Length: 299
Image (cartoon, rainbow, N blue to C red; front, side, top):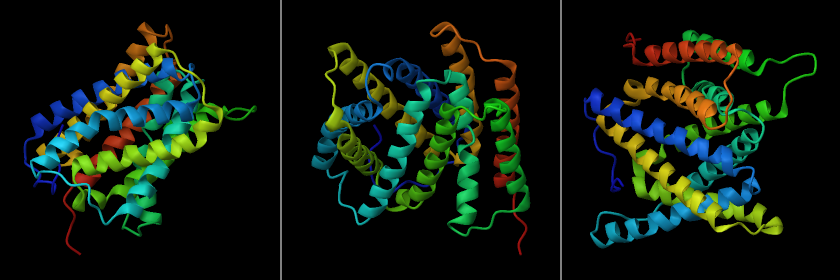
């Protein structure tokens, strides 16, 4: 795990950044395939509580060792920001878990690709950041891609697809909320408070209807938590090697992994509209990344 502290200056090492992101999204795809299996075995809030508790179980000894070495602290003056981020993320994760009960893995993954567009939209509407016309166009095209995947018809849109969009929107809001946290909080501090508050929120909803779970499910949730933590550490590693825009396109490899998992694990292959919609989202996302990296003219 990455030791906490002030985030270091981003190094200009694009190849290690791309490699780290590739490992990250490969692990995320594995974790999502596992989730697709376990969401049918217990209520979503209960799985969330158990997974967050498992993450805390893994993180605690690492944090204690780092604190003993004087390289970590859990002191924070941003408790409200941590709680806000966790609350938004809790809604996002719950919606995603519920969507996975009905949607095929590649479909859910492709819909989540609209998350960056929500980040751009919320940055403009909530944070009042300048968002140029070209970015708004990219956002609009990205949502068109999502509609191609969802395929709204006379009977409307499936509730699971709506939940996937809600998950993307609230995850984008969480990313906007956490934007400033990385400037003052260490890696382990962010991970610790995130999992702590997610666990508390999930427990509040899960305890009234708590169900007994078999040992294999407990072990699987623990494995899922470990994979997610390692994936997050690789993502943070990538951000230290190069700016986020350098390695961001690697996230689209997740669709390939989800298609492979859907085919070989769940015996499901997505229809052509999923690939068409994903292609539109990926193209608009890559354009958005390119526009972010393009030098701005001085005003």
